[in-house]
Length: 224
Image (cartoon, rainbow, N blue to C red; front, side):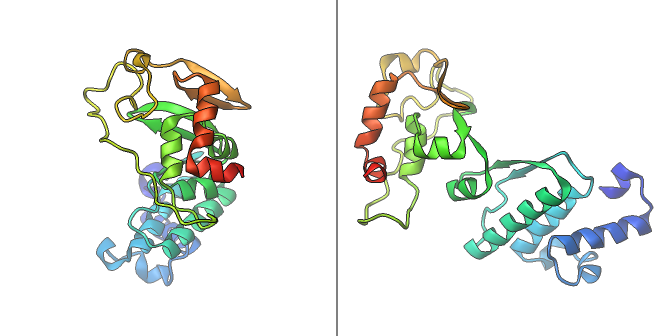
């Protein structure tokens, strides 16, 4: 990457690669730089990928599922590396993940998507503590929590994801949403602004959304 995009010599590129591996926390980088991926652990491979991604000083770093298949300890280390590299290189980070814990830890803003469509977006605190989309409720309701006063079963989202080649004309979450209205399957809802920088696409009237959400176990306990 360095030789192709920065025009450096092979010797200089090798030296820069060693420095990058050292920056992302790979021990003995002079030796590791000449090894194959199968000689690295999963966490070290992720670190090497981060080093490759930042090698050309990008303005935006896109991290697609950076913690998948890693144990919790290694996940935390990888997040620390991304945060450190972001601060050092002043890059924006777009993180694509299903891990809501990672989102809460890393992101300033979140966009909840389903079937390739945006259903809700806004500042993390707004979306987590005042969610308006039933799909967002489902994601948060299926997330384990350590601060619950009573043990509760997780609430899964019923049904199966849609065929992305045959998406419904309306809201892509229709068919799985337990609160859907007849209009939900016919037309995609327009954007509704519900807070500072907080928008939602949902046909359910806002008053009904708030009443319905307040009755759900996860949000009822949070409110109390």
